[in-house]
Image 1 (tube, rainbow, N blue to C red):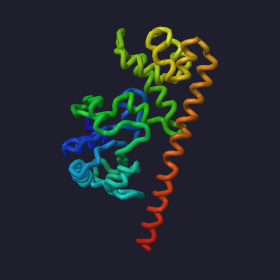
Image 2: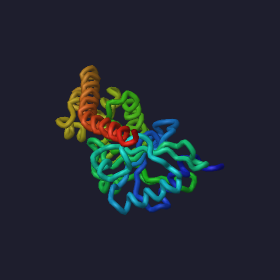
Image 3: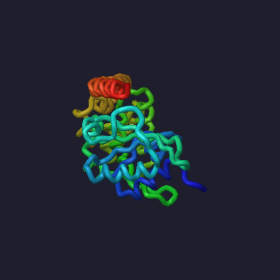
Image 4: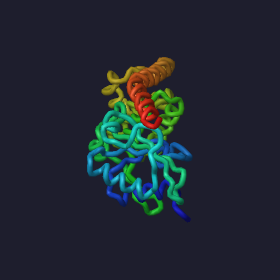
Length: 251
């Protein structure tokens, strides 16, 4: 069976030696939380050597920038995404979105240290750790919140009989289902009590107050959406200025 365009693109990028981490919808596919994704979203290290390696891979894929900003470290380090469309025949039409900085997510080197590595059709792939992917998905977009819930529940239902302490803490900090948060708080009462002051929804779960848990989970989501809108507001203004500048230069 021929590899998918996404796997072909990832293979070219890996062979270039560029350090990248798969995120977005395709990472969710590999974690079992989504059925498909048409795009390739990558988090990259934005130093000169890594960017040069990635540029070489993009050239091999005949990937051309679309929209703004241009593929420059200063834009990536400021939090913008750079977008490409592949035109090489075997990956034609594939969109690749590249970022270096994500709201509320650790620096690349820390993310790299705790990455998940899997093998798909003989190709090793580096993914954002599921905990970091959940954090990256806390956006203002409606489609991301059901995905967050599915990612966490994949972890919750697929873990061995004796999960690690860090995994238990991840569930208690992040579970989005009121029923499952109450269940986890009861099953891991010691950790739940220790972490309760860090998450109001967990504190309510420790008390067994289902209705308040539901209300507080809704409040968490509203607050994260607000933070994301606030984070992106100045970046969107910068993009508009870049678009206007490009239009003036080409007129």
